[in-house]
Amino acid sequence: MIPYKGFDRRRCWRKQMALRAEAADDDDADLEEQATTMAKRLQWQIDGEIGELEAEIHKKMTEFQGLTFAQWFDFSIRKYFLRQVKSMDNISASGDKKANAPEKPNDALLALYGHILASARSYIGAIVARFKINDINYNLSGYYARAYAENPKDPVISLSIGLAYLHRAMQRQTDNRHLQIMQGFTFLYNYYELKARNQEAEYNLGRAFHQLAVPHYKKALELPSLQKVLREQEKGNNNISEIIDEDDPTDLKKEAAYNLSLICIESGSVGLAANLLKKYCTI
Image (tube, rainbow, N blue to C red; front, side):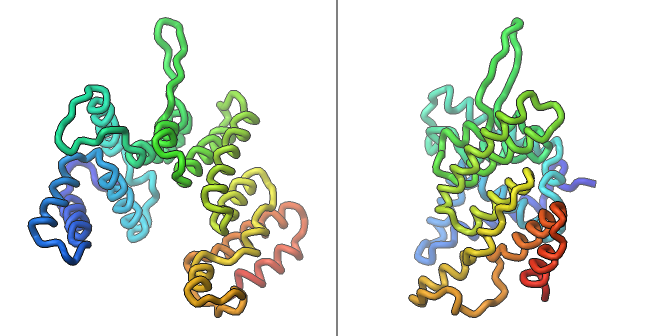
């Protein structure tokens, strides 16, 4: 059974406590200022920080209870977020200057609803909205595209659009597979540049190429993790290889080596796959 259908008092309480913690983040703020911060956050649910908080709550609950992203967003929750998007569009279109109302569409809410559609494999809805009126076809920007228009410098949005195009190209009903792959990698390389070609970007780009059977994980094996880079900057150590390896949650070498070994096995290089697993994936 999928949880969180209808009103959930415990979930509402958890959200209020998270907002209370956010308001109390400033040690110098008194209770009146904290209450004012909470009131501003709760006044407009289409505010970007509320959307980001919703996404973070679902992420944490998924980690703790082992549920997938799609299981959290059942039909009733999708309708709820769609109402939020429509409410945001109505406020923007009406031009009503209400107190503290957002002045432009919020990219976090648009991207979140795009994630919901993508989790249901509705990639066309996430990328572009298509409909027909009086035998005339209309194409409007989807939720990912609208989010990108509001915040083109957000690497996660570019990554999401690229993956949506790539997954759509893998579906049987696609009308132009090669064009969608090219469109997908256009956004993936935009994400790659926005992330300054770091290890995470190399891994995610390699994962996208893995879907096309291209071994791009080698660069991710060569680059240091984010934690090592930050530690090297703090200590002023120019030789990252001298830093002692510890449990590093930001290091993606094991994942990259495992995925690369799958490619090696498919190409017949079983020995190379075994060496990769022994070097990077053996405890």
